[in-house]
Image (tube, rainbow, N blue to C red; front, side, top):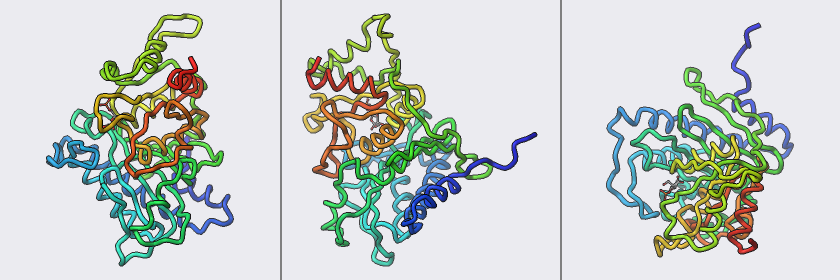
Length: 343
Ligand code: P6P
């Protein structure tokens, strides 16, 4: 008999999760709904980028000292526009904005905080490679409402996130997210003709160990001895331990992460001495490492800065960078032993 209906929508899934929390007010659900609207708009623009005049860069340089592509700016503005009016947020933090983003006084404030990278991997926009939006959601700890006094509420360890996930704009648009606390990781695929995300990957689990390593080998000359030894390990032939691993690197974090999440493997962006301004590597703790670290933890994997769990790091700055080793638990634990000198 033909399958009736469209299966489980993201709306149904979120409501089911809300019903399991008696104390839930529906505020978190509202936040996720509007974030999903923003992602649908971004997905539409990304998918027609090749046709619109939106391609190319605005010529501006963002807080990360990177050329800003127009879609970066557009995506940042769409998320801010969708988030600021819902009455659930006290502030926002974006990879594209140097400072915290306040909620306009015409809208009520709430107790949630969202930090996000509006369009990660943007350098791949013009070559049609998958890119993504990464987000993490926290609850405010203090009773502060003044934007100048909220940074301490924002700079919480990643383990405090009440939700985290990403949207990937690729051959299809997907949303992958978790609400932590053992609720698992679930993936939804956008059904374009219906305009709704449908449950396509329930309770994603990453293999304990993979066969893929993802790193930009072009940084070889900027790595320390321990990092070089780790990369050599993955490349050395040893049938017993299933080596060499296969090298896969797209240069778009969300795409590399998503592949490894589904197939197993390790993504690495080590510390390097390539840029004195970025001794801890290129990736950001708050808007990239922490959200993906919660997702991977909930999927049975692990994320480390080479010395310990990413999720335990006490953030010091909104845009601080961190070395990132993330993916299959056994592979990341091995990387940690190399980088911390235990091997
Ligand atoms: P590199 C994209 O700019 C990004 O922030 C991530 O999406 C990606 O993993 C990384 O940078 C790629 O950096 O130095 O290898 O080009």
